Image 1: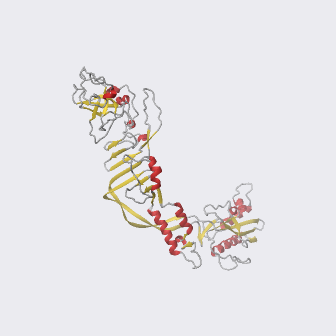
Image 2: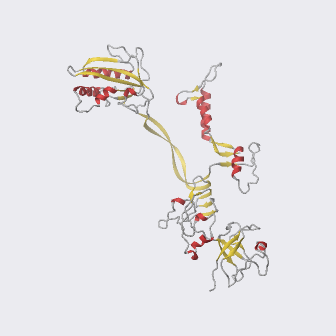
Image 3: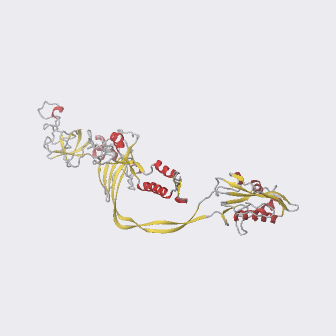
Length: 516
């Protein structure tokens, strides 16, 4: 039967064209008009090595695609060949087009056998894993975003690089995927699972345009309220040592502790004075033989006096003996650990009349009669019961999208180099000879890094300069003394340590973006 196919199969023998025009030597895989293509010209005694790439070579095919789209198949790959006249297989007018791939991750090199799996004569060849779900149309996650999608134009390499032209974006990528080890399936050694995975740390250039622009539209002041924890300054411990249930009289004491490194939120009633507490001398006021009501009044007067800044109870030394207290807030009042354990005793066999009176005392102890924190509570500030939120105003920058086209340009990679040929400083002059076809890694690591400087982060540099200026403008010193260590007050204060730490951190530099 006569073969009437227009496009015929061929197998690449050699792709190193001496003229560098993209020609390849191809072995046709079919006969034309009952003629077999000779292995060498008729009547020629020359070996293949003698006539290859000469005018006598019958296997030279010209790329059908123009030279400006350079796509040269690898040796052993499947190609489509086209003859200008089917009856003249030895004519120079022979052309080729790259053959099909069986799976997109075989772009590095496709075997002659695999290429036929998508053709009529490849029905017996094992089919590949489908990177797109045939029912939902969704690209499988393991290869998502690696390969071009319908509607996008692209130029693909035989490796990890490509140029993708989307409707409003241009992507130039290198390192878009990483190779992994995949088990081979049975049957002709075909790999059915992709051996590539997306690589987030690719090197890339992206140019984009969007229909809307995000613009600033001024500021808005918003009142906020949030809780900011504080360290406890003092703990007022009240302790009931004895309750005489026959005459209903109470013995006990109240005293003050300083507290260190414990926040209000972390200070608990069950641990009390075990939390970094130290007794303040001359603050222990003992009492005996008080009624239940007088006990409550005594303890409350102690707490309320501490709140006002002076504890002045008749029959006891005033505390402090002169002036008023400063810096006592926030403070906490509560029972001692032993008293609290009695309050928590709910065992029916041990609950006593004493426990009943003890709970009455607990319920009566408070800064104000109307307070809902009896027995144990925090005084946040003067006459302020309970933990408080901090009220503040925050200026919020407002923005909105408006219909105005806006463009973005982005370059990314583990290291970025911005190089100029015009730098004349010997330390930073870059010689880019022999890099016309690309810069190799040793040039990056052994040459360019030492002849470039880190890029400056503008805002971070501004913060450093601001601290230096505030320190200079706020410092004072005597003519015979060095400048003061700390400059300014409160939130605006700046120390030499602050400046030195900022310099040492080098946050104002990005060593991975370099210039010469």
